[in-house]
Image (cartoon, rainbow, N blue to C red; front, side, top):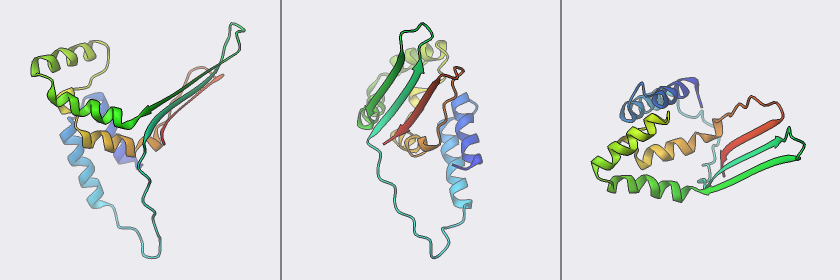
Length: 142
């Protein structure tokens, strides 16, 4: 992912811009990017089916290593995004308020299935830094 796209997604995550504004900015970036040079073949990327979170950590208490391996079907996430359209506006407002109070500035009314697909497409670039040097975490789609 190029730096400009990363900055747009960071602004979206921080709540500085709306999802619609981010979408317009990303579309404008795509129009500016040159096409693939002739002679280079680009294989279409296989559509990801799972979100995977893997973490290995050393236990300081002497209990041995700890391993976390979570595999979530992306269809479940897509269905969840579609279900938000069925929620009444009052419920969405309450959920948004609770998410904001918990430090997660996401507006469910702005969440659309195409945004989830864009996020999934860019998860290859996700880097998770942990403060513990004995721990390693990976987040990716497969």
